[in-house]
Image (cartoon, rainbow, N blue to C red; front, side, top):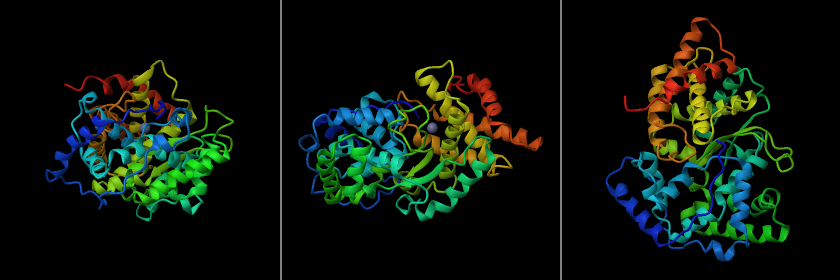
Length: 391
Ligand SMILES: [Zn+2]
């Protein structure tokens, strides 16, 4: 949540090298099957010669205004670029992401990182998506589970949530020229001529570069997030409402990792926790920077688990939830290993365990605690939750 995304990245020979270094992990009989990726002989044309001048700076400014986390895919790409900056052992999610990157040429990766495709999809979902538009429908395999969980979370928490929408984002919009053009004008502020030209470039590259699979490469949409226009530029976000968005790529990753049962609902419960925080103004605290982010992330884990395990929430078996969350936090460790810190897997599990215990004690009294009370109790417990791991 919340921290501005970094953008510009220098691409060059080091990139090809470091991606090469990921390869052994892939061939060593890994459990994660890559979706059948076409070997790309047709490579994406260069962004630098096709993008309007000042494109990167403008895109960076837009991403800052959206105020979103970098997606796990972007973090993984950066790890591939600068492996020395991270001391986190590769997880199954990294191997999955590496398997998607492996068939890409440096030009393909350059397009992915600097062409703005991920941000165009994200901005399209935020600005134009809705839960009644079939172009943003959740994938059939997850639809019932996610919409039911969402409905139950709305009933469970005492915040105003009737106006929050849940929907998907599909990378296939990247082959739809009018839609890409619309995003470039409305969100990125390009005039019609530039927007038309760049939309032509993006849609052509995505449609004709085999490795991008007509936008269905999970890397374009490997993210799920809560969004609110509250506290952001009112002119830019006029008419945009609160949302909870699931990218196809995130759900593809769950499928590939065999985590289709509890993990998607846990992600939804966590993201809904951020909406509770938006409504209750819980982002203000004496903490700053990474510590402030860690507090709100761990609180979202605690709130999510409180809801998942509470008898008046989803009433899921506590042990099953905590086991699923433990594996989820472990695979996500590297994906979130950056200054915009979600907490270590150990801390996240402690926050979740705390939420589950609170649900158990609340059940004895037969009621759901007010969200502000949950937050206050959590803040009291936070020092113990983040106490050093080595104990
Ligand atoms: Zn979060």
